[in-house]
Image 1 (spheres, rainbow, N blue to C red):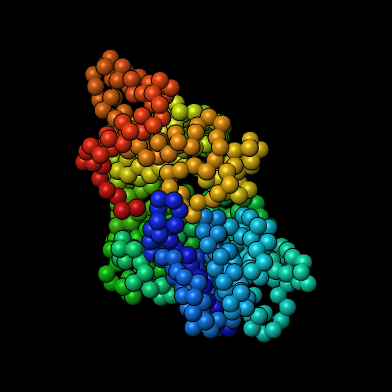
Image 2: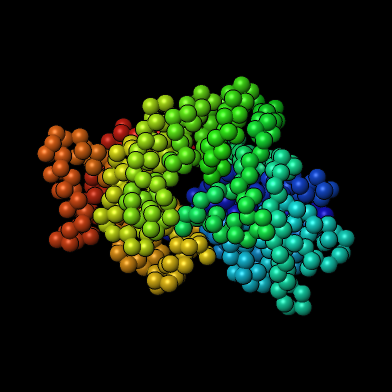
Length: 485
């Protein structure tokens, strides 16, 4: 049968208006590959901007599918609901939805009347069985990992076990994506995943939720063989010899040190392209950094999240000391690897002093790029439950993390303060760095003065915002080297 995927790949929240993304979605690529291997045909409608209802309907109609499928994150689910409604009302086609949101909030997803089927968990095997059944006219209500409706009642099938051998899954279908839809920095970038899963239970991340739904949770973290990963890269370069960079989207590429030693040697020998990846500060040491540098790692992103030790341990469930953060960034800097620090603010129980600790930590580690977002608690995560219990949840969910605005009603920070911190994160990093560079005791006095300016109630929030805004325009950006993360 014919499956048409619809991929919503743009922002439309507040002051970030229709910002294009234009990226490969590996999840859709993998599903397309397994469907084609099973004899089905696939097409993609890749939306990098909002489209009118009639435009969407005409595109789906022209595709002539037997099933319309969406992959949804929580941030994009509101768009998926609307589009599914258009497809159902105007064309009457069956609609399926998979991805992180149906996996972590399945009841919310299946409650959408215009969505006929949801996939809970990994979908490669489930979507093939669903399409086989639909194509043959067989009942679909016994397919593991698929929820559906029968006589108005929801059929909640158990989640099938994780695929333990990732090498058994075909390489993702990249030809389904039209390069004309890609953002400029994506056109010569190969997006890869060498593994699936993360063993840590950070309270704001959905990994602890996803891990818990499977009958074999001990196999949640899996790596492809290094040789299999290299073969995929080589195949991609044969199709596009102009590829200039590889981006690994794994949660932690360096998690398995034995695996990474083998992979780094193969990559250096057979690929020889710069790559960027994610890592975790407490899994980075001198050996790993040396392997990364010799293999060609040009940039690495690591989560700081909060610079406050108490908040990291007690609210975020990140059991790492300040020394680990400082050491990991210093090692990468010494090896000539550019660094990206990933930060958040707007947590339950976070005070202004704690938020400033995050800025001061970034001032100390001197990343090439500091990325900051306001906390958006994803459904059913530990931090979401804490926000619900504390009466902190707002009414809206943004469609991007990068608005710089909080939708929460926090106990210690106001929404205006969170916005101020996000907007002035880099400015304040520079200011604290300049304070620290002064001779003692001037550095201590200057830091205390900046702390007072940021925390005092003697200055109104609007006046503080105006002062900071003027300084932002005068910020000397030579302090930072752009990282194309």
